[in-house]
Length: 307
Image (cartoon, rainbow, N blue to C red; front, top):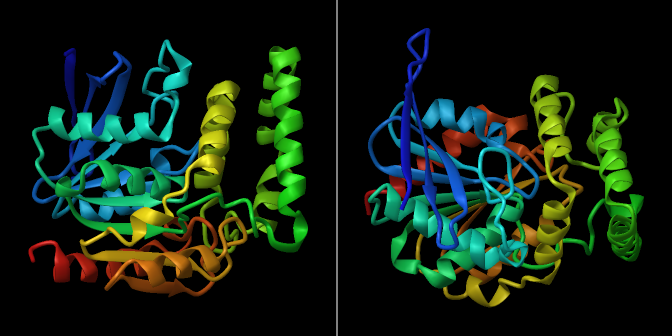
């Protein structure tokens, strides 16, 4: 198994960053970063996202914990599998297990945002003994299309648009890829995403949204489409009742992408789980109100990380 580790010194007294890669089960190179020391926390972002979505949590929790972020296969610093049929939720779960094995971590606290919750549900289903506790932020267990964007766009419209996008890519991949990048980087994309409940522009730094947009634009369109299909097809509802570890579920009251009904449904099925409703939180609650979210998650960890 190929191993690489690089230590990056940080200025201004910040926690140093250790970066590396490892070879996953099918040879795909997975990139990861580590900061801090202590009990391990593994952070899983949403589809087509990037580590910057966890920037405030990494800075805060790496003061007292070993915080680990990584890129999904086909995303940013990680490689894309030669066999693209390995762009699945199962493959992502196996990558996480490979990450723990590579870092020699027997058990960790796992946090997921959006699609990262589905990934962690599959991971828990496969490797429950490695999970100390769970934090789910603006997530969902099954196809989130129903109710997405509220009255702005019906679920059937979203599916039809996605199928048309797939069809167009098959016939003209370069044209569709160019259109994808242009649409994501269009200055109107930020206010439109905020209108749909993706961000709260009154709270989230524009810089963080711009970093996200550039990351999405750089993503291989085929990778996005295949994982989006996985997101629609995977149903982790049955896993919810299997979860036996402490679980905190965070829900933003202004989330139009994955409305509160998704988080409430999870809370009702996970025995003993806690539900935190965050006023004014969008789909990216951890970016909107990081201090509030961090303090509440820290309280949860203090209650459960050492139990």
